[in-house]
Image (spheres, rainbow, N blue to C red):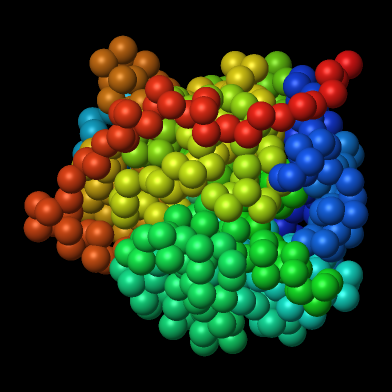
Length: 459
Ligand SMILES: *Cc1c(COP(=O)(O)O)cnc(C)c1O
């Protein structure tokens, strides 16, 4: 008898609600602080950069938030995404483990980012926003938001981290085709960019810097432009829960339940998106799934960072958030998983990790590309370098299961495909790729880089 490997839902199964972990999380939300006063922000400050419906979602404590029909209609272009059992990978590993992956690379932009992009564009549209600014690292978020803004007839300005702008020009061509305008960051459009270039003309950029530029443009636009962030904030994690909600149903179709759910972590949105619905089942329905976050050794915010208040961006314009951080001015070593080069981690995810409800590991670039290659050779999909961190972790779990002789059910999120990462694959194939470890000297010093905040004691 042949075994089913693809678990497909129908259009009607596109989730009708986002799941809000804030309703069930045993840890209280931490306040968002103003970058200058370092006091909790007022809605006024946030509304200079975000539209009202987004701010409401950011603070919401409702367990389920209805997905607007206009957003569901667009989701149907690629959702529900497939859940696939990686039988050929299992065979190559000769493991008793069952490995499943949720494939978000089928979206038009090639990653999970479209899930939040479409929602954010929609909420901006109904709030009357005409124009949006944003940052992009590897180009995935910029691509997703370019598509979404085009669907809703809004303009988009993208600040793209300089190293990716040059490593991945093809991403820019896609964004421009959707109608967006793309700048290499640091740029001379902003005070932030000009200051950085004056000090360091060869600065290769970082997500932190690009965020500063996009926020600065929106904040100084007199309400003309709003800013949109592709990860980290509560509303982005919320939108991504469509991944986990679908996966719950699909695991059910497979007649299995995962022992471990795995995702890579940049700002934390794709991991939270697949993990939070399973965390709900742990918290409320007695399940005991392990939730494993995977980060690169070059930007190990969860495994080596400090849990404290830090700026969301490099230039100290964005709000201060309580999160695991390497320091807002941390310049991550250049690796090919550009989407994972962020100094912090989503506050909600950070709090849950701090509370011991989430596990985390850091992996090196070489072992990650080795896993990516094995995955491509067995399952046929060329994975994004970011997602390949999750693949490596899933393989490690399967190897451990084999050693222990146990049938472990492993589910990971394949957050995107790697069709725009061919330079990276070429570097790996020709033996040029290095591990680029975390600069150890920076670790002992994180604390001194964090702002001194004065927050009210929470009850
Ligand atoms: C952006 C990106 C990530 C990292 O961002 P998260 O917010 O942590 O999900 C991971 N994988 C892919 C393919 C991405 O584009």
